[in-house]
Amino acid sequence: MLNISLVNRVLIWLVVAVGLFFALPNAFYGRVETHNDAVKAIEATGSTPELEAAAGVWPDWMPGTLVNLGLDLRGGASLLAEVQVEEVYASRMDALWPEVRDVLRAERAAIGGIRRIQQGPADELRVRIENPAEMGRVLTAIRALARPVQSLTGVGTTDIEVDASGAILTINLSEAERQIIADLTLQQALEIIRRRVDAAGTREPSIQRQGSDRVLVQVPGLGSAQELKELIGTTAKLTFHSVVSVTDDPNASPGPGNILHPSAEQAGEYFVLERLPVISGEDLTDSQPEFDQNGRPAVGFRFNPGGARIFCGYTTENAGAPFAIVLDDEVISAPRINEPICGGAGIITGNFSVEESTNLSIQLRAGSLPAAMEFLQENTIGADLGKDSIDAGIMACMVAFAAVLIFMLLSYGTFGIFANIALIVNVGMIFGLLSVFGATLTLPGIAGIVLTIGMAVDANVLVFERIREELKSAKGPSRAIELGYEKALSAIIDANITTFITAVILFALGSGPVKGFSVTLMIGIATSVFTAIYVTRVMVVIWFEARRPKTIEV
Image (cartoon, rainbow, N blue to C red):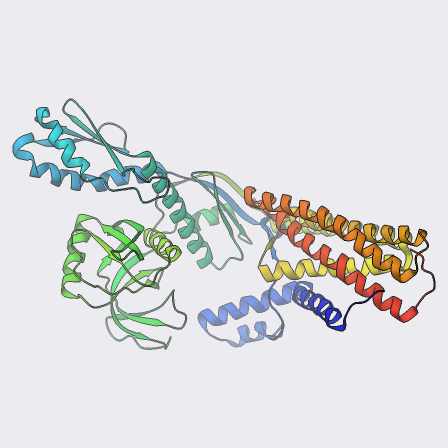
């Protein structure tokens, strides 16, 4: 006999209600968007009558999450940029030269004069030795400067390779170190671009790495690609300040000669800092995640010679005191100076996880773009074109939706009505989940929704055809419905699992439009299975209990 407990029925309808509740704001997209923008502005700059009025167009107790519209639907700007990683290699060699020079000067009595050769590749350090007979001593001294590569793929290798030919000493970065530098440079570029774009208040930008040295930036709602180029080209400001005090009052008076900055780590925490920085990020040459003497995650950093002298003097005088690392007018970290930091290198310790230490090292390096960027492709999509895309996508969905509803009604009668109701619920739940997850809907994503509509109907068709077969074998209506759902379940699960696996692969390996399609497809598969197996069954059971028909027509 058909039997679904009251608890299960309540849970099923509760899930449907929650999904539709979070989908509801998308039916009032403009009002909710105005409300959200006003709330953000109030939090950032304070309340005004105009902002309060704008925030009041949508109730605060209602969800304010919306499906983000992608570049092809909203319009905006897109850039494909290539990061000139070779410049970073050259900078690394320039930063290494003072260390090499100091080591060779200590051996000057034996090797004679030294001179750096400027000709040759920029990512190669070449030094001429006056007495080549002592080249073996030189190689030993320079190889002592090599440090182990801090990566799993570079275990057992060092960061530099040293070679000699006659009187010429040649130093190159090892392949493993080049790979690390390239990865960190791309991460740094992504971080600073994201900070620049987020600071402009744009909605849901897409900033992705493409290949080994390219970055794809898509910003919906931005006026032109030139505006985006100017936005990305802005240089961030990284400074190190003395900490005067810490407060939770955002309106606290910092006092003369001081400045108030919020903490990026702890919401509601503010630092009173000396206005003049101890040292700026322009003197920082490197920052990498590493581990302290106790094996805990930490962040190592290195200054150029001028910065090293300043920092050594400051940390000697202020041992035991905290100092603040400020990026874009936010305190990203405020470690305590445990001991004087001389020699140009130091380490920041704290209660870091490995991920946090990696992110902090990237932020330290993200004071400015790490290298020049060559823009390979620029696109500006106007709002009218985005509106045309939305209209075309909506029309496609409506035509597909109407055709499916008519087909199900004509083919299965009353049971077709149940399937159509479940189909409407399914689409609503898709938008609800897209809103909750903060996913971005693109034109290929709309195609994924259209495909999901067909797959949802397919599951209902399998169930209804199974019920027809059971009715032909002279079973009663109740038993036929029960067996129909039981025997169709395995086919529904198998078909949707294989499609879901394909969608996961598309999401993992694809980019841009492919990801948009796969996201909506994965969400649609989950909701279509739920509505086909549970929602339609609950409706059929409620109808059957109310009517108690002797025979049924499917």
